[in-house]
Amino acid sequence: MLSNMTSKMLPKHAMKYKKYKFEYFGLLNSNKKISKGDIRAFIGLMTWTHEQDRLYAGEDKFTAHVVAFEEALADSKKAIESYRFDLEFKKAKENWIKKGRLLNREGGGTPLLQPPIPEMRNWKGNGLTLISLFSGALGLDLGFLAAGFDLRLANDIDLDSHNTVTHNYPMVPFIHKDFTKVSTKETLSIAGLGIGDVDVLTGGPPCQPFSTAGKRRGLNDPRASPLKVFVRAIKEIKPRAFVMEEVTGLLSARLKHVPISERNGRVFRSEEEKGSVFKVVLEMLRSTGYNFTYGVLNAADYGSPQIRRRVIFIGLREGVPELPEPTHSNNPQMNLDCNRLEPWNTFWDATADLQGGMQNEAMGLSLSRAEYMAFIPPGGYWRHLPNKFIKDAMGGAYTSGGGKMGYYRRLNWDEPSPTVVASPAHKGTMFCHPEAQRLLTIEEYKRIQGFPDDWMIKGNMGAKYRLVGDAVPVHLSYAIANKISELLGVP
Image 1 (cartoon, rainbow, N blue to C red):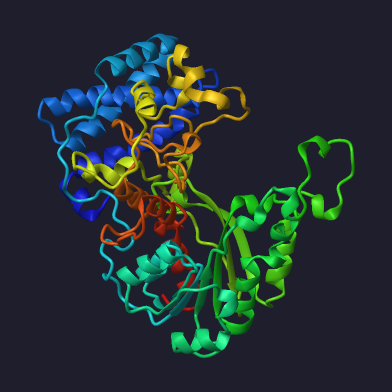
Image 2 (spheres, rainbow, N blue to C red):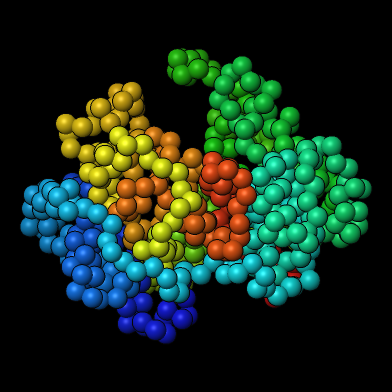
């Protein structure tokens, strides 16, 4: 949601922007003859065009963007209804190529979308304790801190994780080693708790075991993976609840890889079936004796300015576990229902106050990629390059299958970010600013993921992107933490 301060300062435009976002999400899916990608890029171009005029006329950046967005939606509807979409889109792209550049916005001001913890130490305790395993940059656990949990211990084998957590939160003990070599007695001693005293155990066991390489069957089996460590911790620490996060690839992974050439024409053995890994995961979790539930949750449905789907498991030692209810939606019809869900938050919501500031923590684009990106409109990707450049720009990927949505990708101001990646400079997973000739900065990455601005990420540039990119979005973890509080009887 827009911050209270912003809503009080600009109530008219704040409410309008919510309305226009729902109109936008509806418009993206309104026409089967025009691709969603082209509609997205056209609206991005027209918003840029109108906003440029308004900013140069002296309008404040928030008003300029919201009104420009409204005008761009009207332009798009008119172009679609008049059957002149292709012509108008071509004209808009030509205008971008001719004049395209970062608008001269002023930075600063109040963030429109506040993270659950605006500043690291602004929370109130609820009396519940937390132990974090495979902690990374602490994204899953920051949501619990925002909800009032007392973090008693964190763990990760990664040095950059250790340095990040201990720098930002030095009062929390950090076990910097492979957790297979840490006894339950040592863990609880360091946390200052006994068996059964821990309220919540959290973790996202690394997903490398779900490799598709046939030679690595031993790594494919979760019984020989970090998941085994997490299950052992549940059984021995006996927390009142646990939360585990995994990638959605877990749902379809095979215990034994089957070459594509063999996927038709023979009967699969049980370990070769799609989802055979997930069956073993469920067996392992059932062995804990906990009641648990799971589901694929989209962070955007919980206020995150990012479309990121992850498998979330919630287990209870006693009672019936539940997943948190969504608070946001991209479905205009749902806004009319009794739930009155908020529209998805956007990249603009998360980063509007950063515009105009000089950001220096970012990987650079190569000269050739920057030249190609000059042709890509806001919200566009490789298909929006001039035809004469596409083959050379794409290289070997030109003849490969798939949609290749990450190639030469610019974010759109008025949608949530796609799932942030650990390496935004990779050709197939580019994360470029909607207007500027650059990748997203670490600061923008943190905003998308819901980290507080004062949460410092340690390590080299690659490590910073990786730690933030691999984290659980804090808005999602906050929703999970509040649900866990409710399940444990804390209002």
